[in-house]
Image (cartoon, rainbow, N blue to C red; front, side, top):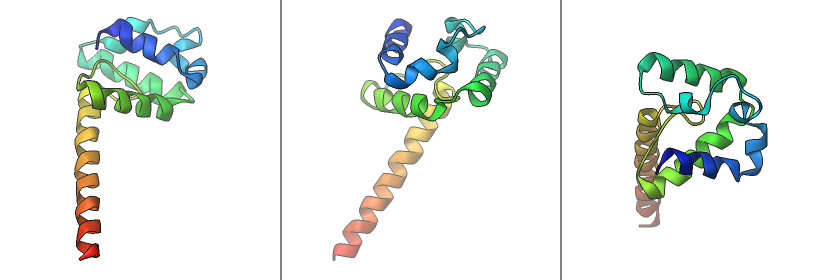
Length: 106
């Protein structure tokens, strides 16, 4: 998903009006798509310390990325790599829960 599509998808959400990155932030939008570890860490700190809708942003990213399988930038205070790991953890947990329910029905 191109960067412009990510920004457009965020802009259409009701919670986005409260996002720290969209309220006259001193951080330019392209900083959220940085590649350097130090830059990514700085943006993650910004999100986790200043954004009142961090959780909504993260869940929106996870929902979108589940169908697109592409991850870009920092969303919800997490890097693309961290969101990929979180998605894998959630899939494993869902599979384990599903298996547990199947065993309970036997």
